[in-house]
Image (cartoon, rainbow, N blue to C red; front, side, top):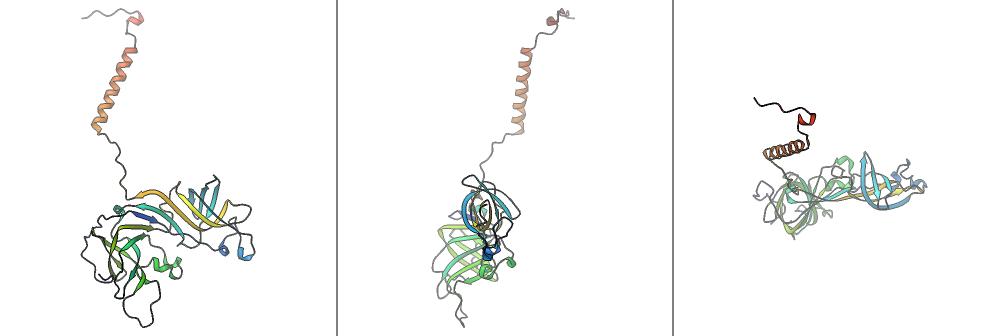
Length: 291
């Protein structure tokens, strides 16, 4: 089956398939020359004494470009995000239920001489769009729909791309047999996925990050203060599963709640009557004769 041909007649809705979904958001990378001098490391290229650091911790909070991270030793570190938007990565698992038609996806595959995939796709990445102006060079290929050969095509080769390629496009469908269809710009793409398909979502922001998520940081600091770091890379992971149905909470009907409330009120009244002295006699007033 050719990768670059008109799409198959997939079901219009994304259907369930084997495999879980792994979510990733891009890593943030900054060169020492771009490190700020405001307590997050001086310019090493200008002779500063920047020290490289890497540590693991958990996210405490984020505000603007500054993340507060608690290191494994309990120390809170202020981390400034890197300059490259493609380098901040959030990673989380998800299930097929998280998928929706139109989502941006990408995958790598190896094409034969006729443009036919040589093996099923083992991993799909789902990601959020990124402003192309913030990307440099071939970084754009990971975010803009199209089919991108890993090796530049030979001059004069007008045929379909061959060898390793990256396919980027909008998801159209995944059928129960493992077929996947997407539109890579103006090119309809179809191929097969492996039974143990792994899915990833890459979003280059902190929109899904939450306090307590694990964080791996690599960056620079100005000695002796290693609690202010200019990040070269940030990767955030979580054990949350996106697309997972939360366990049903115990819900009681209004009638049962009202019945239990009335029962509780009656019990309280009965207890109060038992504890209350007889009216009249306790005050030394004789009972009135019945009419």
